[in-house]
Image (cartoon, rainbow, N blue to C red; front, top):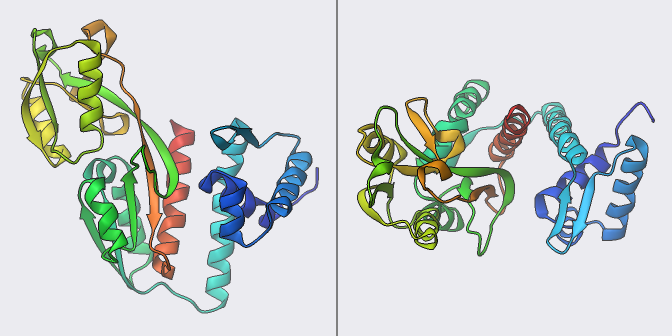
Length: 288
């Protein structure tokens, strides 16, 4: 094994993982598929680990690949930062970020606070809304960067994380024992809503919608009141709630895919924030 990484090969590995295949990575990097394949194969030979799995669903990282990609993103971010520093480039201006509030609370809040301190010349503007509304806002040029729950029928952006959906209810209350399940959900337009209702219908579990809100805090307040249950992302489950499942007669749920979408020509501030976000999410995955 050589003593140093080939940063260009690491960049190719990250591009294949983020785009889901060699064809899309080739378009992103402006390199031929065969050149990318050879460089990644050389990397695999150097490390003695298979890094990518190919299947009909596309190309996905192996466990070793996932671990290396987490390190690679940090190394590539440091390289970009060093080059920008020597070129005298400092992020300035306004950075507009769109994110659903459950992801904001789960893992973006500390990152945004830290980014604001580290880049005082950047004016941060954060818009919390449903993913279905954030995507067109970015397409219209009203946002520079967005973190969304991907639409499974037409996923956009690179995958940051997969979030399991979890049934929850308040501690000390048993609303799940009611014959017709009292349910709190996000408002119409939430990408998880129809899938949650579909899971209940497929399982033959009767339900009634007793509370609907467009913000996580409102849904959680209703559940903490003890009169209903909800389904939320695993990372958003607060200590005040208990998890439910098959033992309570509730059907298994699904995963939401968290995606990062960038404006077509992102500025330096957006690029720096995206690098920090990828690093944060990689560390989040490794700690999970």
